Image 1 (cartoon, helix red, strand yellow):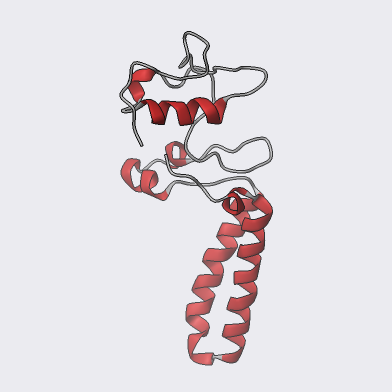
Image 2 (cartoon, rainbow, N blue to C red):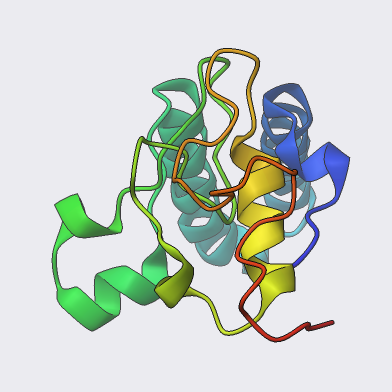
Length: 139
């Protein structure tokens, strides 16, 4: 799984970027008459993005195209409204067979590790903090 920059995980940062882009679109539309129609279209897309962010709704467009289902393409959010990138931390979603390498399994284990439930998916059967030891090492 890829590392996601911390600022991308911040709801405040995403809202600030969307609002900043909306302001930029308005300024461009005001000064450049020939671009107004384009800016209107971009503004509508940005308003949709702002609405989705405020309502804690997010879609995986790749999955939406693949499945055609909005419900299946919804991205889960944590309690602060930030999207969960990578691992789904619901109870017993993964097992060692879902991963190609021990490193992938370890990333999910580390991501979902909480004080209430140390091993949500049962990836560390012997309790030593190392997930799916039988898998080959990876990068």
